Amino acid sequence: MTRWNSTFRAVQCLKDQLKKDEEKVLKICDVANIPRFDKKDRDFMTDYSIVMEPLVKELDILQGDKSVCMGYLLPTINWLSKQLEELSLTGGCCKALAASCAQGVEKRFKNMKKDSTIILAAVSHPKFKLRWLSGDEKKEANDLLQLEIDETPNFDNNDEISSKLPQGEDEFLFNDENVEEPYPEIERFINPLYKSSLYI
Image (cartoon, rainbow, N blue to C red; front, side):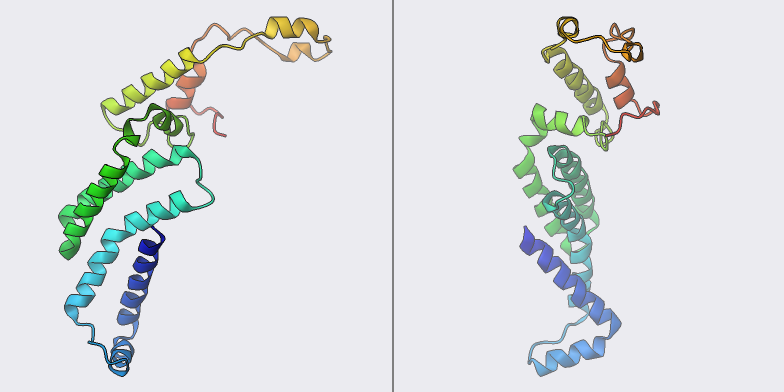
């Protein structure tokens, strides 16, 4: 994975140097006794950079130290798959590379895309929610989240616990009137129309 990033950045650097000062780069080729870069080489570098950029971005995210939770996996893979699918049609001389990468991503993450735990990790992440899904996938993910909430044991022993705790002067701050609503938090969390402060 890291080698892909390193190769991409090396090609990017060489491409930029050829654009900035082609004569200097060609002189280095002559001194090193290696073939000069021609137009086909430059075209390949351009197409290679375009095709590999989404993959490198995705690797930077998933291998980084900021977005390290499981919720990032499927939205990132989903975005990458769409990018590679498009580039397999528009990627110039590197269309085959884009198609091959797309097939590799699908093969590697196919089972994970159906894993309910990983789907829930993405859907319950405030940054993504259902935004990364389309069509029936949104409803299925939403139903999955509500089903998970239904099946989660209710550890509501508030009455028993509170009877053992000393009553303080701040009891009036707590209001239990909304306990009858089954999914108010989920609806506010998932629905983009709500402007609630549910973001972590």
